[in-house]
Length: 122
Image 1 (cartoon, rainbow, N blue to C red):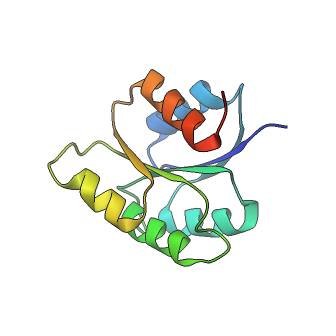
Image 2: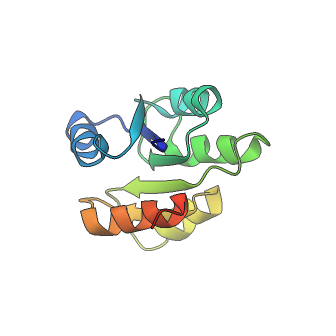
């Protein structure tokens, strides 16, 4: 059975890239803003969430906090994704509840490695 991944991303180019990278190995669910991401997390119960931090409606920080505040969802690992490589952004993401954090452009090998780690796949 395939692991289900929720991708929360509003930029078409980034979304297409993630879909191309992951569609062969995972069942993908897509949300294009943070509010929808929280809703999809509750509906779909994904095994892992890839959360962009700069999102419309509800940003990735707030969406992650909402997911981690929900007793039924808090166990789901969230990997924060951001084009911001500013000092403190990683700490901010982890403080919001992200289990890990990657900057864009994504290092595909690092993403795959982190996903395998959180999904406990060899």
